[in-house]
Every structure is written in structure tokens, then in C-alpha cells.
Image (cartoon, rainbow, N blue to C red; front, top):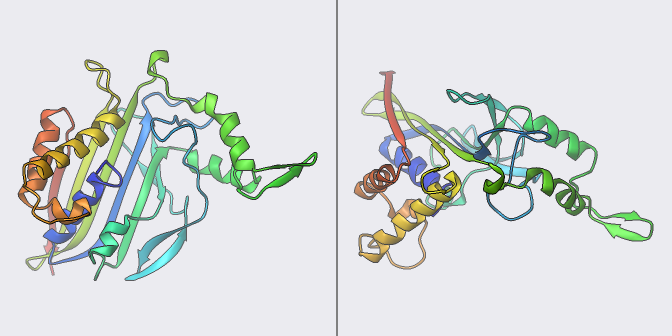
Length: 265
């Protein structure tokens, strides 16, 4: 019930279900430092002491079929006013949308992660060198896992520390193209959120924690009718989505929805 997965699933599912037939789906999300610093222009805002670097295959949908694609592929530029140029790379998509059957009829489905420009090139270089491999190597009679050593070495350089002046931001983008009422329609959701200076709360804590807490309140008051363990996208629909976005807005987290009709089909 956080941001990704969580809020981004709900928004993607809402846009898909608003269509008579969704055709192309792309969403992207990233938690980043406001001021990028070398060597990677990234800092660990959440998730412990290890960077989320995981070369390998991830699920996507291409030409209506589920396929496996290389993570860190299909890099595309992302521009946000007032911020350094960013890039988005393939990173799979939530299994919740697949298990709900929301991918049916979709021609293309891309889930991506956002980082500052140049991040993918640096990660691929590290991967080519074997420095983030999980395969142990022998060093003077001791088995060493390169990735574990990498995490130990890099952590002091990517540690996020508000006491040292670090501030974060969160970028979320959802774009769903499809057919509705005989027209080609594009539904987009955008969010750019920043560190809360007044309350000393990171953007990641706000966007993740507020989303989870608001959904929990819906459960607590009985607004969610389905029982048992449920994916947020299955139970947070219609008026509950509107309520969620309204309550986030009251807390300073603004998600903008744009609906564009391109042409009749």
C-alpha cells in the first residue's frame, strides 16, 4: 500500500478500467535526492543499506504477449521542470495487475524506474565488470560475493542523511492509451513531491506512509467490502480513489490527472 507498488497500481488500474479497451500502458516511479551527487547521482532514501541494483530479466507485455526483458533497457528521457534531466528504464510491472487480468487486450505494458541521467550507463558498466555479480569469487582462499562487497563500499557514498542536508523528491508517472466511447483517449497521472521542510518528513515517507495510512483508514471504517488479503487495486476503486487523492492533496501530496481525447476511431 505504498507508492510503487501501491499507489501506482491503483492509478494504473483506475486508468485501465476507465477504458473500453486499454492498449498501451506505461508507468514510472523514482525516489531521488533533490541535489544529485557523484558517483551515482543517487542516494538510498529507503530500503536499508543496499542499493536496488538487480540486473536480470523482468516481465513486460509486448504485442499482447508477456515477455522477459532486460532490466535497465529501453531507456527514455524524463523531464521535470526545474530539475536535472532524468531517465526511465524497464523494471517489470506489478503482479497485482496481472493477477487481476487487467493486462487482457493490452498491446504494450511497461513498468519503469526513474533515475537521473547517466545512471543506467554506470550500472551497466559495473555489471560488465562483474562488480555487482552474485556469483562468489575466490580471493586469497576466501569466497567473496562481489555485490555484497559493492554494497559495503558504496554505502557511505549513497547514504541519505537529513542531518547532513540531504533532501529527497518522488516522481510518479502513469500513462494509459486506449479506446473509450469510440475515441482514442489518453489518461495520465503525474506527481512530483518534495521533502516536507516544515514537518521534517521525507517525500518517500509522505507518499508511501500517507497512502498506506489512508487505505488503512478506509479498511477501518468498513469502506472496503471485500474480505481477506486483497491487492489495493482490487479494493480501492471509484469513489475511494477520488477520496485517496483528495486526502493526499490535503497533506501536500498532489497527483494530477489529465484526460486527452486524440481522435475518433
